[in-house]
Length: 258
Image (cartoon, rainbow, N blue to C red; front, side):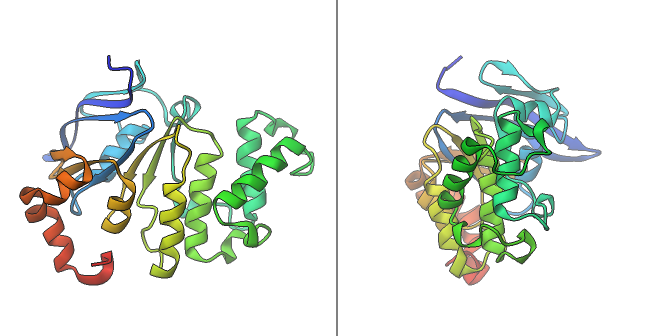
């Protein structure tokens, strides 16, 4: 196996009754990659991510993390091996502040969560790591605000921060800019671009500005199958992609920055 590949799928398919959501998808995520997965609505992107994270079992094919077959592994076991996904907003703790939420994530990774009765932040190393994450994810000004009061873009940043606090090998970012007002989207873009180089990132995103400013490799999914893949400049110039995907984005107007 190519040692540079950290996460791969081999002929991954998912059928729901007569509907094929993903069809024979073979995907290689290389170590340290900035890899974007794009495609029109209904292309199967979320279904694919759910198979990578273990939320959905594939109908056929395999998922490998490094050289380990994780196809049948439970989601929490995959997290333990270093596969993290951005959480949905409703999985944030609305009454906790970013400081408290990040402290819980860091402490649980450091296996000190069993000392839950200690005041959060009493461990100096945890506190130092939390402070660094607050700066990295542009949350310092909101550090002690309840999460429910944060602007939407800041909640998305906290999501990514919580995933990064787990120090994953692989980070799956599922539309981090979705629903974020244009004024706050730049923060998301800059923060995603500045993620640690050693973390391999697979980004699902509709925002083409974010995709093309971030990705060094793009896979295009259409009707559950891989249409094509390659570096951004090749994808941008591909007439097939323009017809199937970028053309559709353009016709939808300014929502995607075009």
